[in-house]
Length: 587
Image 1 (cartoon, helix red, strand yellow):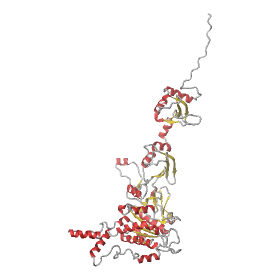
Image 2 (tube, helix red, strand yellow; image 1 turned 180 degrees about the vertical axis):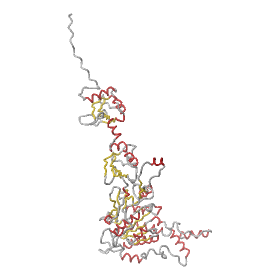
Image 3 (cartoon, helix red, strand yellow; image 1 turned 90 degrees about the horizontal axis):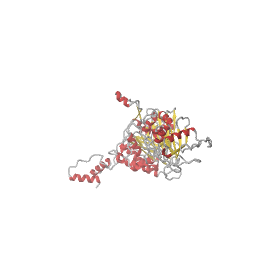
Image 4 (cartoon, one colour; image 1 turned 30 degrees about the vertical axis):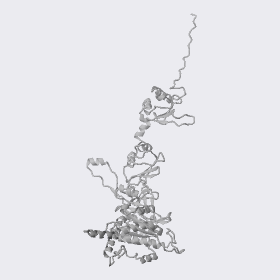
């Protein structure tokens, strides 16, 4: 009875746990902490803040730090976070936290993005950038290490452009074009999808129809050279004009030319527009071919001289080589002294001469005149530029074993913009283009025909149907090697030989000066080059005292010293063998 009556005591306040400190967190953060605590505080970490993604119901970002100050977070993985929140590990992304003003960062902090809702949309309806990251830029993608800058569509030209760059600007793009096409849902077609590389950036152009199947007619306006000797010779896949030169303004010299391609690839068409541009600039043109054809005969009406056999080519090269000597001593009117050729100089007493040799490699292997053609062609390539003479060989190979010496090829490459038409296969075209470049950049592909892929090849095979025959010729499509060594795909201008070419060429044909012709006459080099071989013209004629020796020299000269000429008489005794050796070695 004496004991005091019990008094009600206030309940003790709950001690805040380390998992859920009373820091005024919002409802989302507290709910996230409950799930985190239920999972056992993974990797000894604590959720500082949870932020919901705008417009999303389930996607959020967690800011996580280590429970003990100064300890780095280790052992936290997408699988652990996904298990705590009941989502797939592929929907979790872990990233380091950058140090910001007013907030710590470093190894003791981490950011976890949980995006099941966004990933579900990304898998079904990805944006262009997301598709690029997921399917193209990965280590196994068609352009690893790249990122999409933007995608644009040109409805008027029917083309979609994908401009991209490397994430690391010091890296060069490594592009597998068919793989990129499959990743972007594009038709895997060389005739409609092209790639252009510029440093660490690149552009993929996807056309609705083959862009190089279009025809670009040649006009006098396009072919008229400008003040620097440049004229438009074709257009690229993107519609950009491509220019080449009739002389080298920066080097103060004429320009050589190198044109390669198989039969029916467009070489003679390119000759026509090149000759027209040179003629419009007031230059003289000679054209020699191994065999006569319709187009070269038509061109002969608009140029100074034209012929169609190996003898004619040998004579034209020999005359051009003699012109170097004549022009070296030809006085200029302003001071009476000879000078080197200077393009565009009105005081120059002679015109630039352009010597064309079609199928030069075939002619260089001719049993009778190949030796003279190869030697004079090489000399003209090396020395002709000083005296206003450019050499323009054409054929199907730029390699030494087919008539080109290394010195000749180097001079042609440095003083021209080589043009390579279809060489018979994409591999051969690429090899020929690389043979004319100092450094082998990516060379575009020229297929034999442009054919669109229609339907499924597998379904046609199962039904036993034939593939559609819808090829488009690639004649006139060429790779041109520009001054910086970059190879560009273009369609050359089209000169219609069935109509009058007078619209492209000037009214009057440009000729040599009277002085030059008289000097060539003195040397016995200016006449009808279709005549048969004159006595003593290329090799010494036999005399009365040594007829056998003369015959052997003639035979050796016609064979070019390579055993490719007439066969010597059959040797049946040691004495005949010794005499044959003496005659061959001039012993």
